[in-house]
Length: 158
Image 1 (cartoon, rainbow, N blue to C red):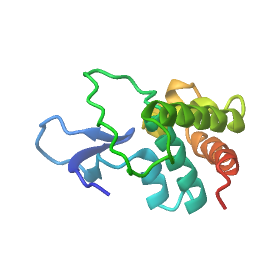
Image 2: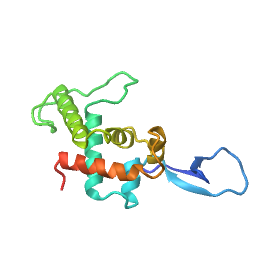
Image 3: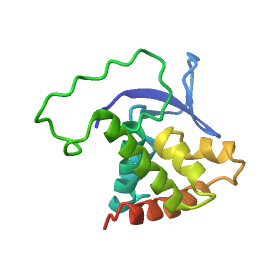
Image 4: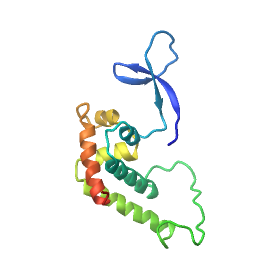
């Protein structure tokens, strides 16, 4: 896992970016390269099965290239004998990943897709996702666990 540690100020609302103010303040070291899902797993809030389900969902999201593209695409040229989805062209692999992603979200069910996308794919923190969806504080973790459990069932993760 990549580590990119920065010092952040602790406030009553949580960790805040340091604004250059000196003096007495409480700080915490934060790894900003860590995903929200990785953060929850590293602290024991998600078991391995749920973490693996989230990683599979994010992998399919990225393979399907569903995120915004802001630069020119420089996709590698396929070389015969490369691994991956056996015998599929890059376009076919992208379509297969999109089908798996859509199936996983459908398997999670209505009302759970938004929290999955926000935390797993868009890498929003749980508090940010809760605020965006106007949920009560600390309710997102329970709903995310339920959604990831359904995604794990879809991917047949034991």
